[in-house]
Image 1 (cartoon, rainbow, N blue to C red):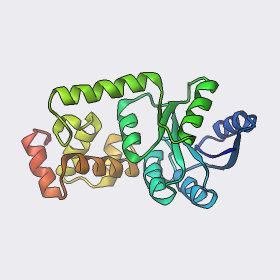
Image 2: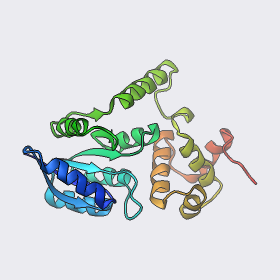
Image 3: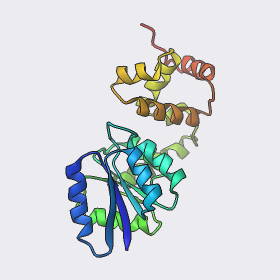
Image 4: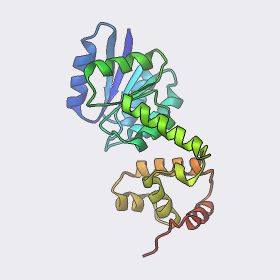
Length: 217
């Protein structure tokens, strides 16, 4: 029996998933949460085999932050991202955060069930087009001699974050200007610093100046 918890801010989505998954003899949903904080608490308490994690949750921790913390707090649980975001940036960040799989909410039921079986057995799962994009990305990086830690590894959103941080904006101000959550800003900043091998704001300012990322009004 594979046990699961569902972390999604939409009650209708949680109900639909519970109906689908509990209808299978080999699957059992043992908990549900509406935000990342509650998802982390439940996973630590119930120790499910698989956590189905949404990415965009407006209250509490978002899915990426929760995934990162869950891998530390409950490493025995596999995390399968179930999201509407068919986006390379989210895909790479989810993998980096420690997710075992990434599948779209638009996927057929059988594909979702197959993804759950894969991550529960210790394997990774990416939906087909994501797998092709991931492979293409790595092939291109190796061809260009870029093994990481360079400007090309930053997404467009991360470049925006670099510019705003270097100009002295607070996390709250950046979140307001880019219309994203403060948690998302913090997550972007952490990823940028890690990718670029930087540790301090002065280093980031120098980097931003070198790359022409500072845009004064």
